[in-house]
Image 1 (cartoon, one colour):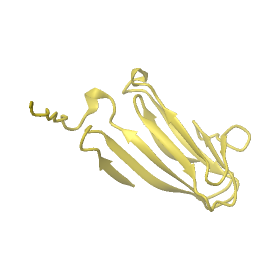
Image 2 (image 1 turned 90 degrees about the vertical axis):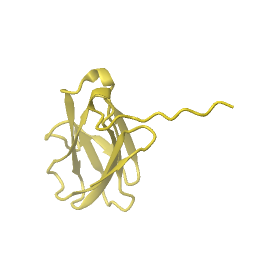
Image 3 (image 1 turned 135 degrees about the horizontal axis):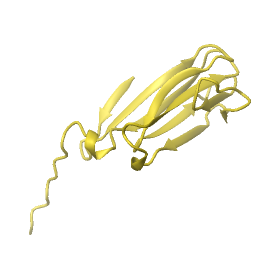
Image 4 (image 1 turned 180 degrees about the vertical axis):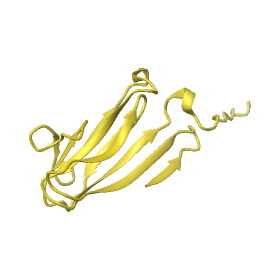
Length: 124
């Protein structure tokens, strides 16, 4: 997993590759809080489908289906709250298929790790 900080906004990105090891067995990917956004991509060389859901019961019958190379983006509004979150789970139809994701984190103003420095343009 890697993190990157945007110098102009003070917000953070998290990115990760996730191996969905066993077909038919759901796997926790990450959590999403109010004000955060995530884009999940099924790796282009996958041999099967990826199924995305909000709990450990995600499967081919109830998950959001991603074919190889497809993406889905989920965004929770800030007013969803800091203390509330949804879980993101994945399953696959082909053992060993992978997903990757990039997530905007720390968007809620009260959670900023460092203050944003605003530099004003000199007047001419």
